[in-house]
Length: 84
Image (cartoon, rainbow, N blue to C red; front, side, top):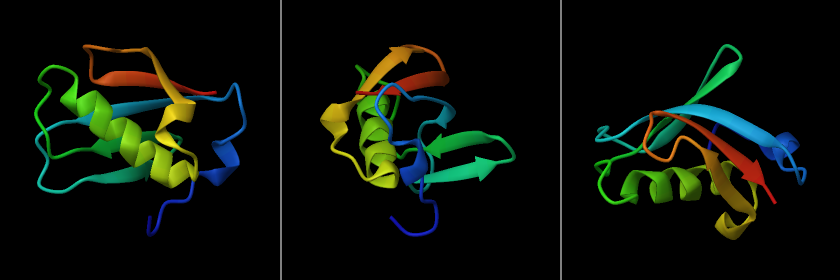
């Protein structure tokens, strides 16, 4: 992934909080101060946006998506992922 490298957050047990915007024009991660925003192109329907965020975050962290688990915010815009 170009631009945003979150490899320093890839330690097991790390929790990453971010705010998600579904139905964006393009998928990307943006650092805004101390927080992260994820923009995904899919709608928040049946977990599709959560899966898209997981893939996007995994690429930025440099880990497989199976090492990320959504622990908070399954149906909310504010989410917390944990690195396994």
